[in-house]
Amino acid sequence: MTDILQKLQTATPDDPTMAELLREALQEIRELRKQRDALEEIMIVLSRTELPWDEEGKPTEGLPHFKERYLNAVHEAAGLLGLELRSTITRTEPRT
Image (cartoon, rainbow, N blue to C red):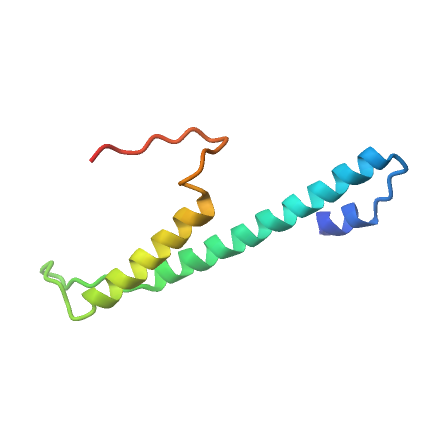
């Protein structure tokens, strides 16, 4: 399948307004792809992080390492998702 970025880059609109719109669309697609890749890396880290409990539910020696990796990954994901900013998606945070 051809890449949408390649198609858009080869488009040469005559209208300057359309050319600017095209540049903005290309930039937004690039940024979204970077965000997708970063979130995928975070998901890989989380999925490869071994749970720090044994079968009886007792913490193992890996708990501090797990906690550090988990907190870092969640913090990075929150930043990428823009949770501190308002979004086009209405979010409701669970009450704790």
